[in-house]
Amino acid sequence: MSMLNLARGIRDDLAKMIPKAERLTHLNPPAEDPASKGYNALLSGSGVGASAFGHGLGHIQRERDYVSTLIERLEKALHITQSGDDDAAGAVQNAANSGGGLA
Image (cartoon, rainbow, N blue to C red; front, side):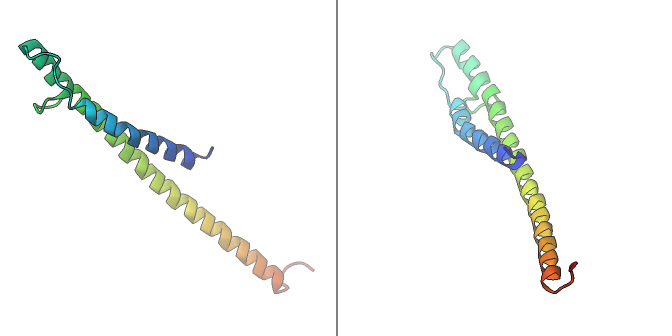
């Protein structure tokens, strides 16, 4: 498997994780007592500051963005390489057709 295909697979896996991680930030406490509410706020946020699951969600989003940038750069580099190879092949073919090669 090429590096580009591997990166695309990782990006797709991360994209699938994001909705699941977002759902974790909307959990309700199991009870309405102060301890359950406080623990839930630390874990899922409940709209109050940063939470463990909120940080996890942000981390997954940043990883996806990083891999997306890597993919863009790999595609650009591979296109430049492919384009250069195509140009070289065309030049060799033109030289052979014009009698510029060895006869």
